[in-house]
Length: 123
Image 1 (cartoon, rainbow, N blue to C red):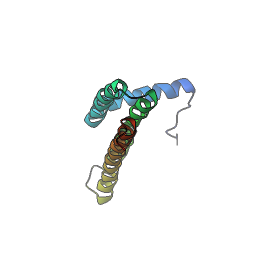
Image 2 (cartoon, rainbow, N blue to C red):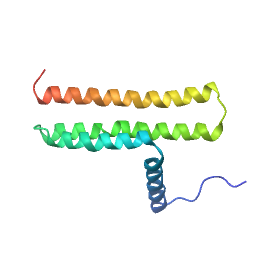
Image 3 (cartoon, rainbow, N blue to C red):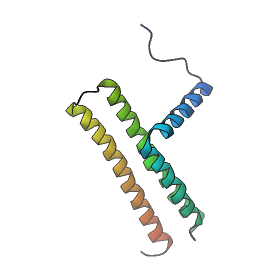
Image 4 (cartoon, rainbow, N blue to C red):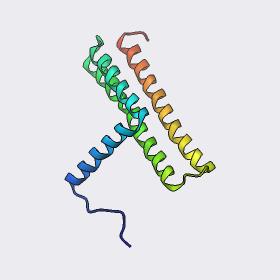
């Protein structure tokens, strides 16, 4: 029995990562929305009249939902691979992935509110 593990090296791993990124951009609408949010809020973060440090924190926080969306997409694909029938555990796995994305967005908003409050001396 051949394992589903090809020989890896740094170059191949990079190619696999790029293939995964291209695939998720092509096939996941939610990921496209996350990328649009990264672009637009990234522009906002870098153009606010605040210090470089604050802008960096705001910009880096935008990657939290991106990472959660990637993990959620992986969960959804594995569930779809395992079963096409309705199963409560499949639903729960997908719901937990969606909850992860929601929580990541909440954390990102909390970071933005906190940083902006400090940067503009609102606290």
